[in-house]
Length: 131
Image 1 (cartoon, rainbow, N blue to C red):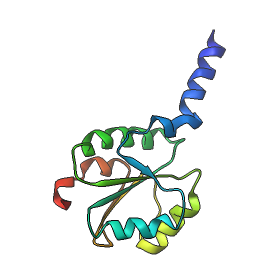
Image 2: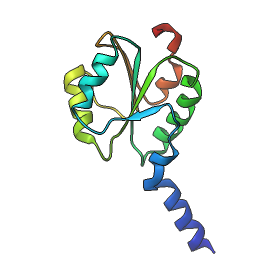
Image 3: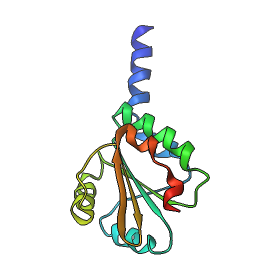
Image 4: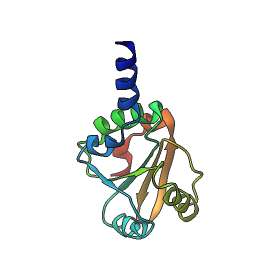
């Protein structure tokens, strides 16, 4: 019984199906080329990039709470799975001149980073300040 519960807990924490559990507000970033599209979009609409480590419980907690905060905002939301796309995270750090962290929220407006925060600081962001 304990072994089954332990494996179920392990599978829940490290499940590869986390993408299917994402809220509908997210568009996943899967290529470096996608970054140019995101920057262009930031000229028309505020953009949020959430960099998430799918094996980190803090990152998962912050993501879930952030989703509640952002769901009613007019912000285009992008999600980066750091474990599968670390090279994209490195490119974001270089192009946008931000130090890599996880979890990390980057807000873009008019092709500029107007905010970048990490960990529980993400939950203290007043998104209305960027609309």
